[in-house]
Image (cartoon, rainbow, N blue to C red):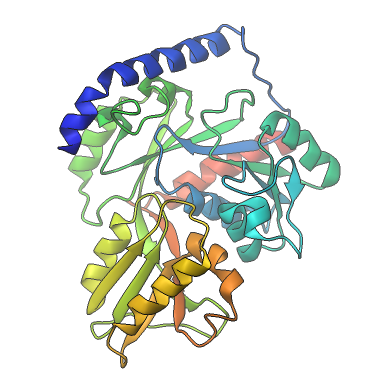
Length: 351
């Protein structure tokens, strides 16, 4: 039924595609202006709406770079309740900067975490307020062409490659497939652990990268859960009953993980970037009480966790755990990927 409905939306998808192609053509012909900075700027993005792993990729880059370079992240701050440019500080909340930037700020308090809808304006503000900055990572900015990043990393979901997708609203693409040619690096994310070298080559052939483009593959890895309010580590095993509280675009990998690692799980799913309310809190508690008292926990994602922290008092007596996620590069190519990043930044320091 859903597939048939998407077919009915083809005329709208065709029109949307024409608008995006016209916009890209205007940028290509310099009718619409792109600005470039003589400064190392790395863009992480995708062609589709929904989860391809942008947030853990930004975190991967931060971990790689922060001990060598003064690193900053710049995000739009999606669904925050404020506007304009801001840099996170000790008093900042997710409401003010958005959930992903707040996650960066909490996990990496020693870097600069900035938000601003107009990246062309925000980048000079970062450099003005934090002149020691040596590299800026743009979160979810591939389609925002007013800034031309020096290194573009394009992510695509293994189970929904952009080559097999359709334009919105018939599919999930918010940019045309041809835009992939602007990427320097393409990363196929959320691959199955058993991905073979033969299938890898088939996917590369399907993506048809330019000679100068490099293609990498990653799988999702879930680390040991930790308590939302700092009460230690949690354990997931065959006897654990989980209430999954989830407001992310693509929860399927997480559901697959729980299917094989815990006894049972029940999920309360909310929209992506959902702002939790007291009614939601009541719903969560009711669902939790239905689980086996001897083995039950509440589990959530890191993105959701930053929006649940405001209920510290109300959830103080509940076992609420956060499940960290990260990319793991496959086929032994992590070092190769990291060398691309460090070589890019090094090209500026040698100038």
